Length: 68
Image (cartoon, rainbow, N blue to C red; front, side):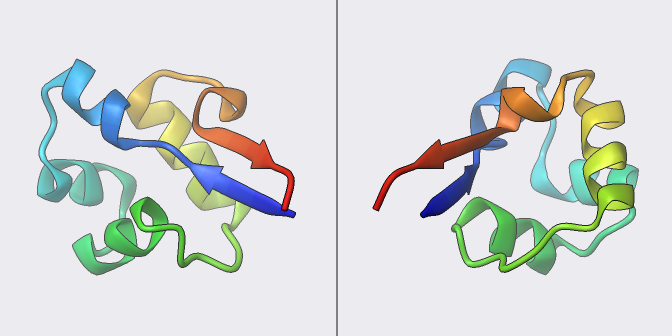
């Protein structure tokens, strides 16, 4: 089972840089890279809430399940 986090497209659509996004969410750019590159093992609900607030989206817009 693999859960993918897709935020690249959302950042482009909203004209946000990784740095702007990281500041708005309250995480480091390095942690944004971990999310974007699929290396995250977990995401706190508070972080997911902030991501959705900043990107004005629903969790299902950025979280995708892929069967192994």
